[in-house]
Image (cartoon, rainbow, N blue to C red; front, side, top):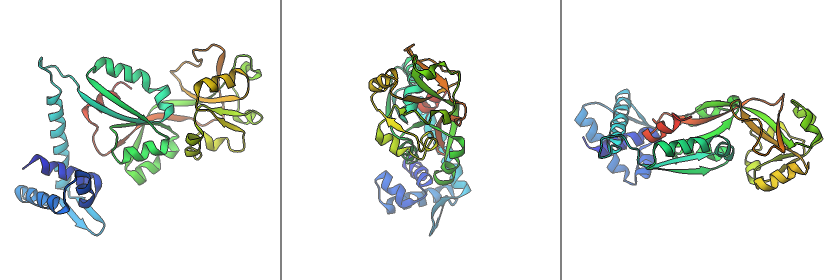
Amino acid sequence: MRIEQLKYLIEIDRSGSINEAAKRLHISHQGISIAIKALEDELGVLLVKRSYKGTTLTAKGKYVVRAAVEFFQKIERLNNFDKHSEPTMRGTLSIVSTYFAAERFLPSIIIAYYDRYPKMKINNTYRVPKEVILSFAERKYDLAFLSMLLQDTKSLSDAMDLTFVPCAEIKTYIEVSNFSVLAQYQSISINALKNYQLIYNCSTETADAQKNNWPFRYIRGKSVRCEASPRIYRELLLNDTGVGISGSSKNMPLKRQDEDIVMIPVRDAPMYYFGYLSSSEPFTISAQNFLQLL
């Protein structure tokens, strides 16, 4: 039995195709087929089933994959022991997230992660929600973070074999100048905002990509402005040019650092959730340690 044979079997399970596995591993179809056949002969069991619909693993094949994944995780743990035999994480953790998740939730977690694992490097890429989901489904990143309505998550498991794991409830707030006439309200209805221009702190490209997602689909017919620059966004609010739309979880402060901008809860906006995506593929040790800090 060779390490390469186990890696081939894991990749076949991930991709559902020997051809696709061969492409991802940069080897020939014949080479990966011969290796798997040799592993089947050695173990004396059938590991894969081939049909016109693709390649699937047998029950024995899935058992071998689980055992192989556990084996590689143990090897990773051994590689992360330093000369004093204390576990020290090394390497790179690749994260993809939406701009909202990157701004509101991840900074404190990343700081805590660096404090605990100073030899790790984090590559954090920002994308619109659709691209976050697609890139994680294609296994381009170790972790993916975004915000979603729970009613929208069923299609993930149906179409992509992904699961959305919620971590925090998010409520909708408006942001206005402390001198705005709206600043006196303890809460407000989205319908009451119809005469105001709504401002999102994002680019028009991001807004266009999210037009069918929360919160854009709930404010159709209203005047909306998108402003990518946080500085200009703040100036618009302070000049009472429009009403900012934002979100916050229960354990986040309802006021920004600027006391001249206040946040007011929106009563009839849907609750949504911040969380991460998972798949049938186990998380790496470095990703598991990051998730423990949530």
